[in-house]
Every structure is written in structure tokens, then in C-alpha cells.
Image 1 (cartoon, rainbow, N blue to C red):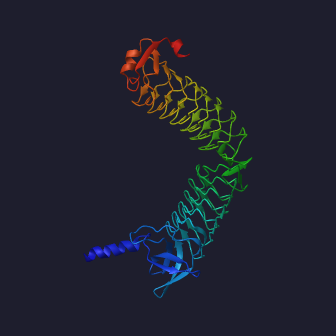
Image 2: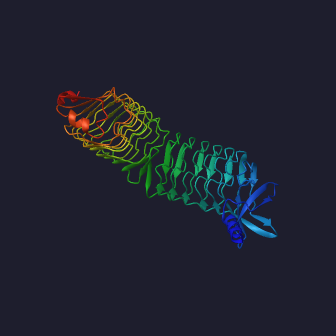
Image 3: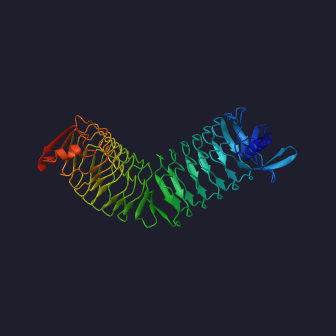
Length: 440
């Protein structure tokens, strides 16, 4: 029993969410603390726990001034951190004053503090964890100190009121979804030191029009507010607030998520210098209605047009040999597309939920159709395949379409083979037709 009690006490002492003591600051507000090191007399700010070990919501409100030191049981402790979720969901919190003794801010420390309008991060802080200000919709501006070299995942995600961000000239990395959903940001200045920007860093920044880059930056360059690599051979990111764009002829690659969420763009002209579309390159471009892929493009990554729901027609050149996974996933308006005879495979969920498609011709060049390739294409009434021997399919490649109203047209003499083949046997109505008829 004694060993169990000792173990339980040790567990409490090691638990960063366990509240050790509380004290008043010089404004008369109660602040709760964890002891980080009893030997070094250091503490971090934490949240208040109830007797049922649940976090007490809104324990902090209005302006909170964190002291640099605090007296406890006759000893002076230095406040060196703000712990995980310390102020999270304190919707009545309006501002926080952080002392220069604080060196770290834990995960989700201020998450969903919707009333938080201002916070000054001192240069003593060297580590800001994930999601620290996530969901702080009232935060309008933030200056990141020069002591910070990396912005963690989702640090400012969902800060929809954030209009001004100052990135320090010490910053080297902006991680995944760091500013996602910051819909009020119109411009970002990339300092010379920033060499790694995650492709999702500015997802959902629907007002972002201008990304400028310091001329001394070794990795990136800006042209007309669009982010490119230094040599202008790769388009890295177009701000989602842009309504038009001219791509220079030096560009050979459209990078991953380069135009993701650019819903205000109604057309994009791709120069013939471009050879490759990386994954999700034009995903969620909900303003696009048609798209012509130049014959110079030989490779497309996964999900290139995923979620571009107003896209009705896409011209695919014979230079493309594969439709990768989720290429047209969720393109619910797509009703006019011809698969060229250069295509040999259709990837997983390539046409998933393309609900406007009514007919499809599968050329004889296609040897593989992956799982759920045509899932949810409910308006498909006719699929024609030009192969005498069925392409390799998964059992659910055509799942989700109307099996009774959709007719599968196959070459003369091939119906018995298709009725026995995996993935194809799901069609109730299989008809034989001459090759010329399949092309119509």
C-alpha cells in the first residue's frame, strides 16, 4: 500500500497537468502553477483543476499579468514557462503580459481564447509548441520575437481575425498548417533566413494576395506576389486571395498545393514550359470551370484537381500516362472528360464522387483500375471499355454507381469474360458492341 502511495505521489509530481499551488499576482488575480524543478525553484503557469480532476473553464479572464517570480512556502520560484493548455478555452481572457523569465510556451497554451486581442511574446521565449494560439479568432496582430527560429504546427491555425504578422529575420522554418485559416491576412513577408515553408502553412488564408521575399533569401523568390523557388523554375504558392495570375515561362513545376484553395481564380493559363504538376496542385480551386493541361506536362501527382467542384471539363493530353490517386476526387461538376489512349492506369478514388459524369470511355491502353476509382458516380449511365480482356480491377472500383441503370459496353465476344471478372461482374447490364460504337 505504501509503495502504491509513493508511486501515485511521484506520478502527480511528474504530471505536467497537475496543479501544485496557486498564488495571487500583483493585480490580485489568482494564477495556478506547476513546480518544474524543486531543486532549481522553477515553475510554469498551468490551469486550475477541480476536485474531479477536470479543468475549470474560464479560470482566467480580462488581463492576466504573469509575475517573473512567486513566493511559495517561504521559497522564491522563477516562472520559466506557460504549460500545456494553461489558458486554453478561456474565452473571457483579453490580454496576457508575459515576463522575460519565460522561455517556453506549451502546446495549446492559449488555444481557443477567442477574446484574446493582444499578447507580447518576449525575446526570452525560445520555444513555442504546437497549436499555442489555435482558434484565437480575436487576435489581430502578432510580432514573433527574434529568439524564435521555427513556427510549430498549427500555432496560429484558425486565427481568423489575424491581419498582421511579423516574421523575424531569425526564422528558418514554418511548419504544417502554421497559419491555416487565418482568413484576414493579406500579405506575408518572408525574411532572408526562412528556408523551409510547409506546403500547408498558409492553407485557408483566403485574403492572402501578396507573398514578398527578402532578396537575400537563398531558397525563395517572389514575382508579382507569388512565391517561387529561387531560380523561378517551381511555383511554390499562390495566395488564395488572388483573382488572376501570369506564370512565367521559366517555370517547369507547379508545386504541391501551389494553388490549393485559390477559389477566386476562374482561369489559369499554364505555359508550355511546365512539365509537372505535384500533388494537390489545383486542389479546391472552386472558381475554375475548365482546364487545359498542356502537352508539355508528363507527370501529375495525387489529388491534382481534388475538390475543384465547379470544374466541368478538363482536356488531358497524350503526354500523361497515369491518372493518380484522387486526381478528380470530389469534382462534382465534372461532366466532360476524355481519357486519352496514353493512360495505362486509373488510381484510387480518381473520379470519386464525380456526380455529374454520365458516360465514360475506358481506352484499351488501361490495364489497372484501382479501388473506388468511380465511387459515387451516381449519374453514370454508360461505361464503354475497348479492351477484350478486362483491365485489372478491385471489387469496389465501380462501387456507388447505379448498377441497374448503368450499362457496361464491351467489345464483341467479351461479355462472358467481363461477367466473370472481379470488379466488372458488378454490372447487371453488360452489352457487346463494335469498337467504333464504343468511341462515341
